Image 1: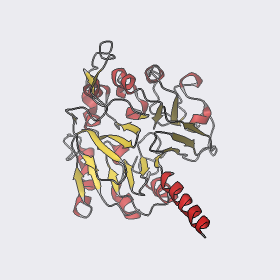
Image 2: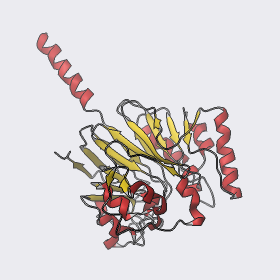
Image 3: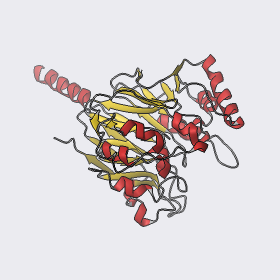
Image 4: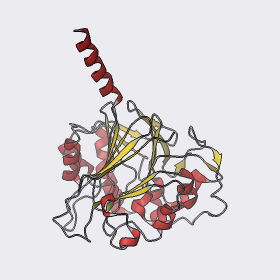
Amino acid sequence: MRIFLAFLLTVSLASATAKTLDVHLIDVEGGKCVLMVTPAGESMLVDVGWPASNGREASTDRIVDAVKAAGLKQIDYLVISHYDVDHLGDVPALAAKIPIRHLVDHGPYTGTNAQSQQRYATYAKLYETIPHIAVKPGDRLPMKGVDIEVVTAAGNVIDKPVKGGGAANPFCAANPRKDELASDKEDNNSVGLLFTYGKFRMLDLADLEAYKNYELACPRNLIGTVDVYQVNVHGQFKGLAPELVSALHARVAMMGNGARKGGDLATWPILRGTPGLEDIWQLHYSAIGGKDNNPPDDFIANLEPSTPAPNDRWNTLKLSASSDATFTVTNQRNGFSKTYKAKK
């Protein structure tokens, strides 16, 4: 009997230590949508992709399917990084299909685009029925077992280094600050998040552009190093700041691009030049990239247009991280996975 009880205790402890932080990149065809499930079973969705328009299906059903496939019955925190259409999507339609417990964003829409104003107004009406949090840099989101720090929001960045950051950045001298793009200022309002689970660290800056990335990197790297870097702005060149990307020393870059959006040719030299980078994973084969500017097929969730449908069905990428910084990335399309062992 004692041996049996000891066996049960061993299994129980093994289960407790085997819990992972799971991150799902959901294919919304060039929009953004990332689902995270913490070791405690709480969930966070970052952005909801596109609304339905001009023959494009809404991302809502894909999200609901992915949430249910992850064994969830609700979304505990929905983070809207900023109010561009490919991120804000149709939140009321999503809320009608699955419970959302908290809304998180950078605060009021301050632009002048009439369509964006209307989309925001429709979304903001949910504040009346769903608790709302407007975050600022330095805030933390109250999720169990994982530290989630806001490093950018509403055009501002953290004013002091996070734990592990603050070193002088040698990459600043060769990379002067890029100009801000006036047409895309909402990108620079993006809520950027640093996820820490034990020794594992992942950075997701949504659509923050190179102009604003510079403030996180120079003259000091305020972030430090990370294991995984979610590539800014779907892999568009305007989001890539070599001074930050190089200083992060990420082992893996994950790109939420579309077949014809993101994955820019000019992005590849920056990512490939990242010290310590082992692999790039993409949601889509980039039509403009060709074989030389895409990763091997096993690292791409959706191969169209190089391989026509129905071979692809909005496949996802899943990352599962342990607290010792060992993590595995899996391609839903073919089951291919690769494990990155914790560095000693």
